[in-house]
Image 1: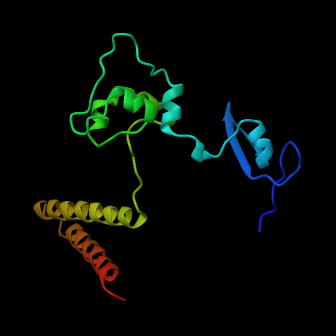
Image 2 (image 1 turned 90 degrees about the vertical axis):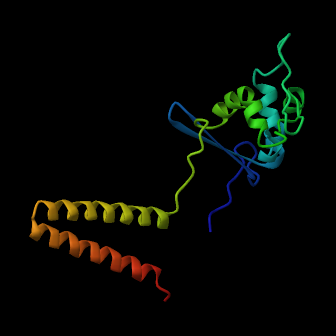
Image 3 (image 1 turned 45 degrees about the horizontal axis):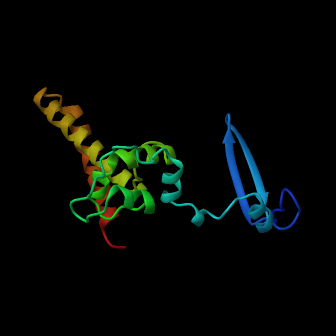
Length: 169
């Protein structure tokens, strides 16, 4: 088991661990609860989108139109106050306010997601199977029967492997 880390300031057991990257150099600081509070560092649950919005340049400008979501009735002032969207349509209505905040919080505004390893391997074998089938068709058209036989055998091998993967054990 890993050794307990000590507070960088007072040598008590550290419960708050901060990592910051500046100019491609990693700086780590370990703090006990009391030192973290003295330094103004709070737990991650203390941060919210509302905090980010209050720090962002989102204060209403004089004469700015107050938008209201037609679906749930939430207004711009409500969104700025709570930092929460009322419904899925709010994102479209308040997009001009949300996107700059998301860009600051994340690397971009488009969700990339993750693909499970099993799905990646299945997709890869499906693409390989399609390529082989196309090559087989082309080889038959060109009357390259030796190549066609190789492609046919490779296709059979891939299909057999897929059947083994799918069949109950």
